[in-house]
Length: 259
Ligand code: OOG
Ligand code: MG
Image 1 (cartoon, protein in one colour):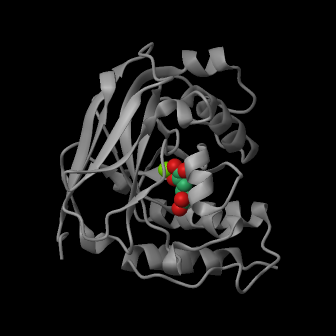
Image 2 (cartoon, protein in one colour):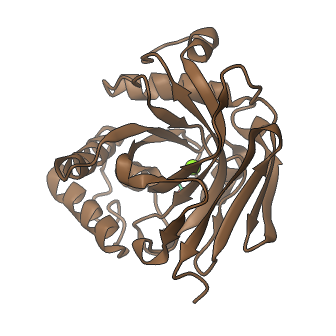
Image 3 (cartoon, helix red, strand yellow):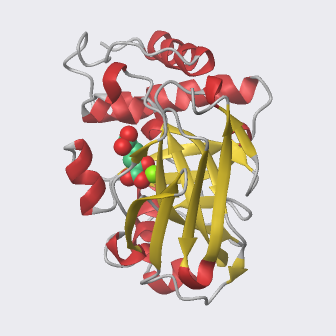
């Protein structure tokens, strides 16, 4: 049986020390998805005990590009905490990360609780603002390699996120052209339509998946709906930006990058 607390501690330490560790499933091939989410929850509880707050959730593997890049097909979710928040345009420290990658995403902010089986209309009614966003993922596993249970336990690789200017609810997010640049060179281009055909479907899935774990998506929370394209490595980059048509621009710089 999986030692939930011990594995959570190992992942939490790896994240804090920016040090890669071997995959959990290499050691425990029987790790169930339920155990993996329990490890994720326990690792996040350690952060909360240190004073971080839950600020939302993230979805993963909601586009074909991401599924193909990582070789996994099941949608997963993770928790976003206050220490992961990066202000648009601000700098992040390279030393915080192991082998960071960045993804162009769409984020929504909620103004009503959402959980369990909800319709598209109910999901839309709970949205109070939408934005283009960037997620920094940084798998705590060596070589960014993992099986499904590993990545779920590792909070779906989430490490930091940056939200662009909030736009009013009702702003169309179904097919937003996205152009991501790393150090001013084009890195990935795509459309938000790649996120499950329409990113709102990812919010419906977030409510269902989080709900099945007993979690309510709370008013004020942010939901990151998933990468629209494959992720780009930013191991030695100094700056990342995303131009997302009418959603505008979001970006960050990397202190200690370019080494
Ligand atoms: C897992 C996280 C996937 C997304 O947007 O699809 C994800 C990973 O690729 O390491 O964040
Ligand atoms: Mg992502």
